[in-house]
Structures are given as structure tokens and as C-alpha cells.
Length: 274
Image (cartoon, rainbow, N blue to C red):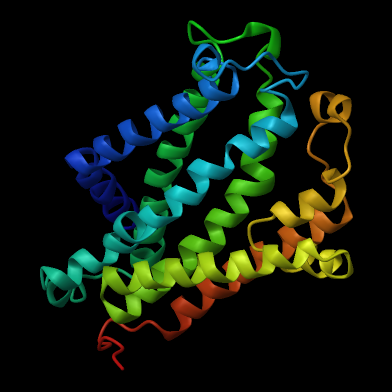
């Protein structure tokens, strides 16, 4: 039953215009971001040049920040809607009578949403890579394609964040049966993330920010803040002590959130209301 639910959700999204609209938006945004960094608009801004390599491992990490920050606002409509649709259409009264387990239902719904988000993330990766080689870009600022830079950004930063943020949104929508409450939870996440990142502005709080910042950017900045241009061009994003601690904390929080959803969820539950 797990596969039936999972593939039914995937089929639903592939038949929805919204999926293709989201994909096109993020594809074009990614191309614009990387092409701009590579100097495609230099003739307008009269930029004379730069010594920074725009597709270095450090730069790739930075370029992913904008699409990732925007994509989180789509989590409620993608991940949250996988389960909210059952409530909105009142199909849940029928589905809950089917002979499948709570684990099959929740895991299939959650992973199907994660799958769709990962497709969009892959599209972002392709868009960023293509943007660097667009006609009109300054190829003196661009190195050859380096797959490891993209894999590091995905596995060190994007994937742990996706687990935590999506589990929170999924839980909120599951128990409130309302996608709009999921959007409120995203706004709260962004506010909390901003506050924790603000701690890094004070040298005395950088250790705390590196551990607690859910985005992981403060942990990376702890090591890269004083990198020279040469180091930014050549070195990979460090997977060092504070980065590891931060990522383990985020993965643990995401896992605990999912386990809590499974523990509390009931096929006969009523929506949580204030």
C-alpha cells in the first residue's frame, strides 16, 4: 500500500500545471542568479571585473541560498497539500477505512512531497550550472563544472534543512488540516532563522549561532568569515566540527518531529483548533 499511495501522489503532481509552473520559475531564477554572478549584465552596470571565481565551491554554496530561501515558502503547497487534500475533499473518511497502516500512509505522503521538492532542487542545480555558460557571461570568472561543489551544497546544507523544515510544515498541516497555517509556520521558521543568524554579528555569540542556526549558514560562516579571495576560489565548504554538530542537531530535530507526528497521529483524529 505504501507504493500505491506514493506513486498516486507523484502521478497527481505530474498532472498538475502548478508543478511545471514551479519548475519553470525556479529554473529561470537559477539561471538568472548564476548568469548575473558570471557577469552577463556587466555591459549595463559597467562592472570592470572581479578576481572571484563565481562557480567555486564557496560561491556555489552562496548561490543556492536565494532559491532555497524562496523554495521553503512552497513547502506548504507541496508537502503539506499531500495530506491536506484528503481532508479538503473529505476523502479521509474513506481512506482511513482502507487496510493500510498509519506508517504506510504518513511515510508515503511525506516522501512523495519530498520527492517533488527534490525534483525542483535538481532543476535549480541544472539552472545554476547552465547560467554560468550562458552567452555573454565572463568565462574568465568561471571554472570548469565541479560536481562535488553541488553535492556538498546538497548533502551538507540543503538536505538536512529540507528534513527539518518539511517535517515541521507536514506536522502543522497534518494536525490543523489547513495549508494556510503551514504558511504561517514557514514565516515563523524564517523569523527564528533570521534571529539566530543575527547572533553571528556579535563575535561573542558566533559559537552559539553556529550550533543553533537551522540554515547551517552560520556554522559555515564560522570557518569562512575571514577567508581570502584565493581561499574562496579554491577551498571546499568545510565539513568541520561546528558544521557537523549543527547538521546532526538539525537532522535529529527533523527525525524527532517526524516520530512525534507518527506517535500522535490517529486516523480518527479531529483537526487541532485554537
